[in-house]
Amino acid sequence: MTPRHLIAVALAAVGAAAAEPVGVRLRPAPRDHAAIVAPVIVRAAPTNETCLVARRDGALELYAIGKPASDTATVMRSTDGGLTWTEPALAFRLNTKAYYAIQVLEAHDGTLHAVVHDYREGPGGYRGRLWEVYYARRAPGGDWTKPRLIVPGYIGSIRGFVQLKSGRLVLAVARAIPERMEAPKSGPDLGWHSTFVYFSDDAGATWRESPDQLSLPLNGPNATRYGAIEPALLELRDGRLWMLVRDRGGRLWQSYSADGGARWPALERSPFISSDSPAALLRLRDGKILLLTNACQNWTNPRSYAMGGREVLHAALSGDEGRTWRGFREILHEPLAETRGDRGTAYASAVENSAGKIVVVSGQGEGKRAILAFDPRWLEETETRDDFAHGPVQWTAYGSAAPRVQGARAVAVPVAPGAPGGAQWNFPLAAAGAIEARLEVPAGVTGVRLCLNDHFTRIDDRKAAAHAVFVMPVEAAGSLPLSLRWTAGELIARVGTTERRVAAQRPAQLGVNYLRVEFDAAAREGAVVISDLVARAR
Image 1: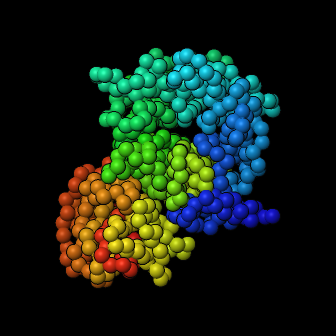
Image 2: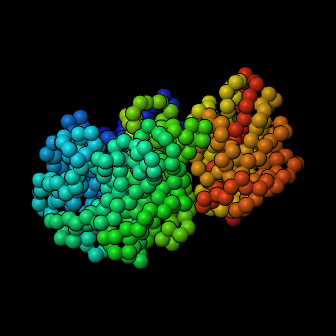
Image 3: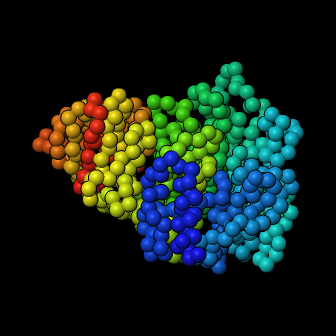
């Protein structure tokens, strides 16, 4: 079987559990690296929370916990930049068993370093359970060492493990505090966990703990009380170490260490919108920084799964050490099939292959995990037109009828009486920009609103428009030329022959990257049609 056929078979496996695949899952598998521009899935991922490593010899490796036994770390290998992969093979055995989390890096000298959970029961953790961090290493040409304990206690998912230019290894994790298992009767509730940092200056032989404990007060009640968890790390060019921390309050939090991770100031709120999900960071060979995050919110049900959802995964690129960002484009969509337990597109790991493409593994739950690839230059596009060659790839309509392609240059959003209707289109982030399109509104469709926003929302989120950056009602029907031009504080909207100036409801965090079309319908059939759609940054 040819590599292309192998990819096709794996791609079919990705969508096998999905009632209806959406977005990038509609694109055909790539023929070669030259064919990879916008995100495309190359195969299913083996399990949750896996870790990609780009080796110095050009190979890619994917490390995971061997399921269902959970007592081994496994590795898959690709020698063609991620297009095809070997089957999972044993990397090393654990002392007992792991959950999912594993992080592996290749050091400057070619040594592989791994941190992984290992389970035991006893005091000092969370209600008698301990998920402790064990460390193993493999020198070039050697075997993996037996994993040994470096962080005791109940440790959340491991996301932050890096080597600095100095050679120092730095590990950031969230550790449960036994005294905080129950919410306090008074005062701030910091949740179960705080973030702690550990570092080694002797290639993992010994580890020291930073004296700084990073905590976050919880903003309101919820069934889960995680606290400051799942930190991601990246070394900046000026020598500082940047940390992004997951929180349930709608944003990621951050801290910067000026001394290689030994000391950390208190966390501050970052500009990055996020559901209760972790971020991932990657330095590219050209010096730019890649950020992966779930910029999703659910305003009707803030206590929804992951406090905002994980329907889509976003990617952004910075060429100035995080001061400004481009992109925030969707690179992975969750299939529409509902499941229980962990699900969605979160827990990403990314590498850059030898062809300059970004390879990402992400997703949780059967049929939702995937290995995908895209060209980072796609994130920096300043103009995008809709691509209907493979269906409504750039459209999502979670919570409403799925959009369909109509003709050569249009998408039709079906109406359904008594239910919210609509869909949304993700385009490259722009602080100032313009959208041009044609909008066809049939008779019987009311309450049409166009929203420009800086994050993803479901169509059945009835409060989404109230939290959008701009909202423009459409009161006419028929075939209407549409022009939307925005700056930081104002939208100039022309629908048909009517022009209106609309003030921003709130400042955009970093720019606008979503067009949301929503409506109510009394008609039993028909569709709102959007055609000739183009977005440009200004």
